[in-house]
Structures are given as C-alpha cells and as structure tokens.
Amino acid sequence: MKIIRTHDKIYLKENRYNKPKEMFKFIEKRSIRKNSINKKICDFGCAAGEFLFYLNKKKPKNEYTGIDIRHDLLKKAKHYIPEASFKRGSVLNNKICKKNFFDISFLIGVHPIFDNFEKCFSNLIYWTKPKGEIFICDMFNPDPVDVIVKYRLSKNNKSNTFESGWNIFSKESVTNFLKKNKKVKSYKFEEFIMPFHLKRQKDPVRSWTVDMNKKKVMVNGLSIIQPQILLKIKLK
Image 1 (cartoon, helix red, strand yellow):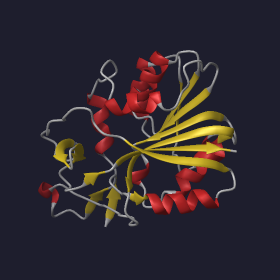
Image 2 (tube, rainbow, N blue to C red; image 1 turned 90 degrees about the vertical axis):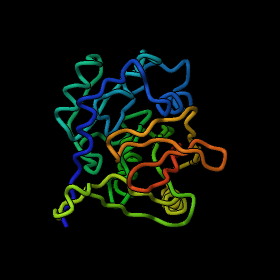
Image 3 (cartoon, one colour; image 1 turned 45 degrees about the vertical axis):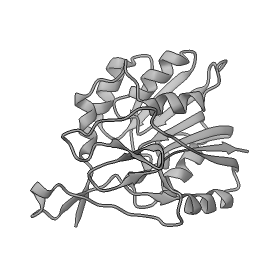
C-alpha cells in the first residue's frame, strides 16, 4: 500500500480570506489575548495562510510565521499576507525552527495526517518558549481508541494508493503523553460545535453537518463522525 496526501491542493482554488471559518473564530477567541503585542506566533501546516490572515487582521501587532510543506500554498499565503514570514518544512522535522522560539504555536487540521501524534506534538513543545502556549485543533476521540484511517475514491478502486488525513487519536492517549512531558504545565480539551449547518458538497471528502444528540455534528463521505476539539497546552 502506498500512502499519499493530495487533498490539500483544494486550498489553491479556495478564497475564504474575508469569510473565515467558524473554527478560526473559535480558536482566535481562546488563544491570543486582546492586548497581545510583539508575540512570535506560528501556524504549523498553515496551507494557504487563511488562519494567519484572520489572526493578523484581528491582532496585527504580532509577528506571524507560517510553515507548510507545499511551496504552491506558501506562495499563495505570501501573496495575501506579505507582512508575515513563511518557510517550507515539515512539522515532523524539529530542525526547521529554533528551540524555545515561539510564544504561541498552532497546529490546525494537521495531526490526523500522521499515524503517530507524538513526534509533531513533541516538536511543538520543543519550538515553543517556556510559559508559552500551544493550540492543536482537529479530531480527538472521547473514547479510549486510536483510529488509523486510509481511504481512496471508488473511481480509483484498482489502485494500491491510498490517502491519509483522517486519523483520530484518543484524548486518553494524548493525555498520557502530555502527563509524561516535564515541560507541560497544564492542558485542556474544548469541544467545537458548528453554529450553523454546512451543506454537503460534490467532493465526498469535504465535511458537512447533521443533527445528532441536539448538536450540529460534522461528518463526511468516509462515514466518519468528527469530534472537533481544541487542545490547549500551557508550558512551564
């Protein structure tokens, strides 16, 4: 089986800079303080920079950096946020940034790509300053089960190539990891609920919402119920 990741190319065609995701609003309100200035802030796996664009608009007096593995996405991000710094690299490579460099580190929609979360989480802790904060947002399983997902579209059913991007690590596994890290002071999981419904799109991998247990729950064509969670980590 060959594993690839091509789905991120969708961000080259989209333009949501002036219509930010509700999740971006949710994360911003819980992360950067109103009086924040001169903070070094990085979005790891920044894609086309839509989240950084929103942060810069809301809190312009900080230093923003975006890191991604795709040159084409970084080029687009630089076009929309010329005042920010951008760098090509992987969150799995701890040499791409200096130790204890950022005040606040973000990882949004990235860790489900990997079959292990420990490496990228460890790197985030390594790159973030003492007393700094880390915000990781995507799926975390409330049940004590780590789920590894690989998929392919049915039109490619003869292929031995599968896509990654929808792994769901459990809160319990992440909690055990954080408790063992001596640099971690505290951590908190907070659920994100969409405030309105998302329609189903032509692309079955894109998410939409359904009513479930009196909530708007995100799902997709992989038959996955998505427990969208913001993990906030404070360092000593």
